[in-house]
Image 1 (cartoon, rainbow, N blue to C red):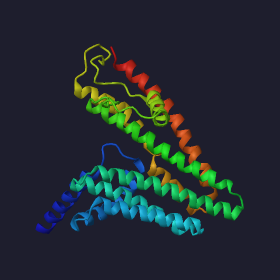
Image 2: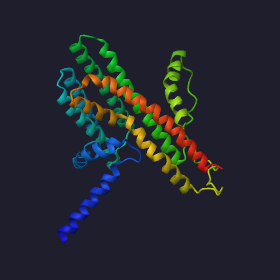
Image 3: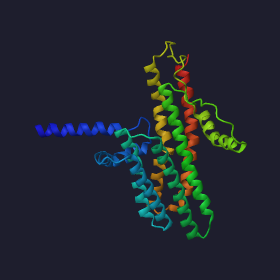
Image 4: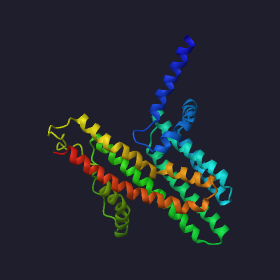
Length: 298
């Protein structure tokens, strides 16, 4: 009896620790596949007092080795290393949340590590294809693949930020202190970088539930809790759909295409699927927002 109680208590402790590693809004693929697979490494990292940046480094190394394997047409080993990379990519964030080891450098290191890894991998894939097909145009195709993955991740993070800011009552755009005048070239570059995000925010803007205008159909104002519940009912499922355009889904798609020995399809399937989902989900969100406003705004 005592042994049974002890086992149950240990399972409860593990469950509590796992819950601490999860995010309110995360990529579906990561939540159901890679994060559970990486949880034993999170526990091990906690016991050995390893840092999240240690696992970020291992993740980057795994992706670079995978890129090398792609360049040598060792595609199955490349797919295995990509799976390991994505598991480690979830471990670093989970360990940071479990042990409260957050840093600005860690966030930037994780982000730029993924960017560097994807760029190198796309170049190595392009090298392998251009060599086998004797056509250097494949470099361009695989760079387009890397760009599509980057845009998908950026837009998911933007949607996630809008969603969480709405729930917390914060505004989407934070007013920054005036900056010193920059050169015309730097100003132009900033505008070009901000244009896709600004367009995406316009297309997918969430209703502002902090406004007192939102009420039920019988015109009784909703409480703060009722507003949040209504907002989550409408938009939480949509956020799960948005997550499919981000990195975890892209990695999984690359692995699946690799395992069926169709690496030459990656540069076609990935950009088309990501951009199609962006257009479709933008349209769906516009319709969901209209329905939400119609049902709840006075």
